[in-house]
Image 1 (cartoon, one colour):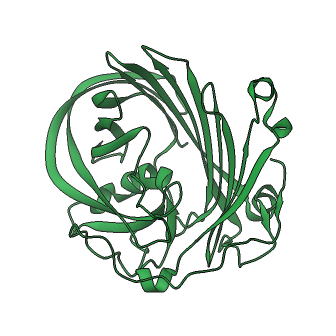
Image 2 (tube, one colour):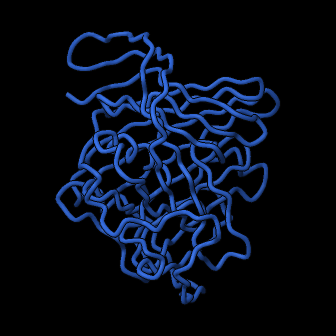
Length: 315
């Protein structure tokens, strides 16, 4: 990825309140050591189909030497960037395709670099093509999240590659982790990594983590909500031949509740995860930690289910 350097930012750091908006979401855990260092998978593919949209989600997990990962991350002229605590940096890459019944196909790429020890986010890169195109590069710092935004200026530029787009804006979204009760700031995409890692201890008390959305922090709480039998149909790859699994699984239900934390925005942003905005529930295989299904409400499409179709397990 091309390395950018954000110039002087015209945004002053605000004094942030430790309070959150009403809603009763518990405070974040004061330690993230409950998150294991690894999960059982390295590639997941999901599909969702409804009358309004067809959605394909592809997730790939990899490890980088921290020295090389740091070269790929955006440089910032101000602030103290968050860096990996060890020799390895993890990367979760998303490729998502949305085919609406009415409208253009949209492709979204999203790559997040993070510390595999505590799932602290280091950087993010997002690219959207097909409609409302943009390229956004983020760097997480102790003082907040820096963002470099690039968009096409007109229809002619829309046909060009992102490095030819001329509309550019730099921004800082400040926060005070200590006042907000956030020992670690993660990324919303990493919630799928966290719930998978949580499976062995899912029967314990609700777990919470602070995650950055588009422009502000949210408190994300994962509540165990019993078990439910669901139908699964996916192909599993490991060191041997692929195996198709069709079965009824008694899955762990982990319900996601979120709340925006105090920020300098005029209005709190709506939380979203893989196109879902409300009533998000993860169904987890209690033995392997695989996220078998993700339910939620999608904007303009109603309730939907992302179902696991393919998984590549770690050797």
